[in-house]
Length: 475
Image 1 (spheres, helix red, strand yellow):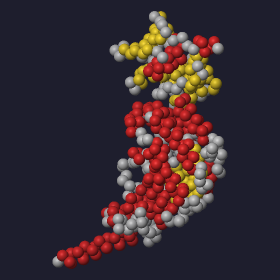
Image 2 (spheres, rainbow, N blue to C red):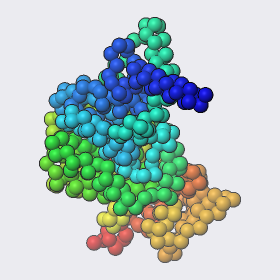
Image 3 (cartoon, rainbow, N blue to C red):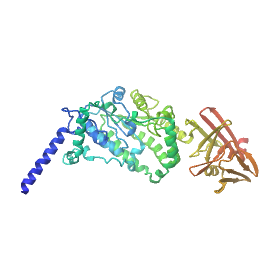
Image 4 (cartoon, rainbow, N blue to C red):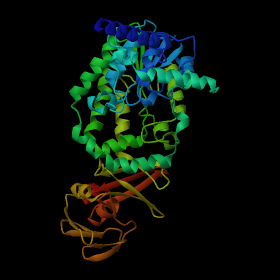
């Protein structure tokens, strides 16, 4: 009886395995031709079959920043037949596994690879999707999660139902593409920006050392470059909105500085290999300042993916990273992060502050606009530190006081009148309380404390606040 039971169990298992291999809705073992399977949007599960069994010579690797690439456009610009193998919220080790599957077929001649700093961090994995490692190796014995999974038959049945309902056949051109599913615009970005400046502070508590990030780069990316000199690698830094850089600068300066350092260090590693080109679109102000191109702080329209493909296809010198421009590009991003700010129309403008000729940077700054010009509201603690002044705060009256060298400036939140050295002085812009932080008008405060302040607007989108001590201005 036991023998018959085992035999029947073995035969039943064999039948299940055989049927799974035949219907194979993810086309994991072969490209199915006897019916038309619908592609799964679970990228980590669908991609291995596409990589193993479809025709292509160019692949796209990366996070959600690469999902809106159109294979036909990439193929036209880079030359070749393209398969998009993007994975939302993916990390460098997942990219490595995906690339290895494709490279293992011997078909790959070119790779377009979006390189996000966060993907190199081991603690940034998307926990919503457990990675199916068994689909990315050459071991048949561990494929049982797919071979005996009821979802295989569920998907097969859904494929048949879709066919009977006359549903339109899916197109690989738009697989994983979310461009038409979301709305874009500066109002949405501004709303995200406001919450991110408060909500992302905790990220700085678990920032990984650069050594860990560099090791991930070497193991998961550079190792493939070394192992495949016959393949042309086109890496690029995706163009987040400039406000993404501002938030990192405000809430997680360690991460901001790490990514700046990594941008140059990764270029230096790539520069050693003739089969690599690196492009930088994070410093592309013509895109990053146009918030109508974004749905949040980072994710941009399909149009931008097309522009990226076109720029790489023509090897545009404006975006190609070289020894001569890497520091310039990094400096540009740092300058953007230090000066970019939203105005009342949710457009990005730049406000820079200098103290005796040296740049003075304030985080979590807010722009105040009026008939008399623009003013920068800055955290009072940062203003006091720059002044070298004594700071006090009275919670019941919400009054902030600054004292130095016999001068005292007292300001009340939302009040348009300040007390300076005992006298009432009208203010063009009142102090504000934003997210528990008191913000004060920087030009007013420095001027009342005895400094010379010059505010200039060389153009509609640029304000320059130059602060100088009496001795410095005399010189």
